[in-house]
Length: 190
Figure 1 (cartoon, rainbow, N blue to C red):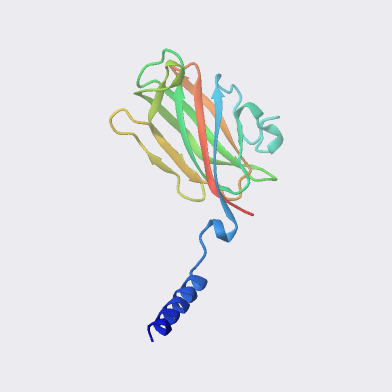
Figure 2 (figure 1 turned 90 degrees about the vertical axis):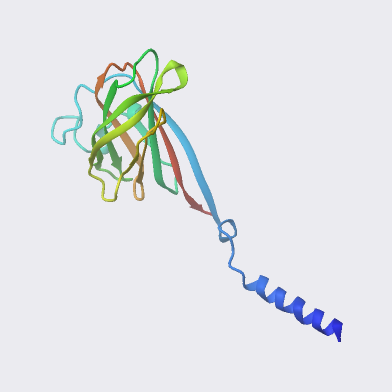
C-alpha cells in the first residue's frame, strides 16, 4: 500500500512540474544590458531648430558624434554623466536629449537638461553629475534620481519605438569635456 501512495505522490508532483509556468529564459527571451559612452567636447553652435538648413529634425541632420544607437529590444535607458579633468563641483552641462524612430524625425525627450557636477570622483580625474533637471517632453515620464551624499544622478526613460538617441550639448559652464554613459535595458525575443 505504501508503494501505491508513493506512485500517486510522484504523479502529482510530475503534474505540477509539467504545468509550472516557464521562466523568462524558457519563454525565448534574452535580457539585454548594453553600456555605451559618448564624449561631448564642444557646444553645438547651431542646435537643431526644425527650420534652419541642415538643422531640421530629420535624421540626416543629426551629428553622429552625438548619437547613441539603441540595441534591438532595448526598451529603457539610464543616463549618467561626468566631467574629465580639473572641473569643480557645481559646474554644469546643459544638454538637449532627442529620440529618433527608425524613420525619424527627432522628438525632444528632455529640454535644457542641466547636469550639475557633485563631488563624487569619476574616471580621468573628473566628477560625476550629482543633480539633473530639465523639462520633460517625452510621451512617458522621464525619471530623475538625484544623488544623496556625493552620489551619481541617474536619468531614465522609456525608449520603445526609438532607434537612437541624440545628445545635443547646449551650454557648458566650467566644463571642458562631458561624458555621457547610456545603459540600455530590455528583452530580445529569440
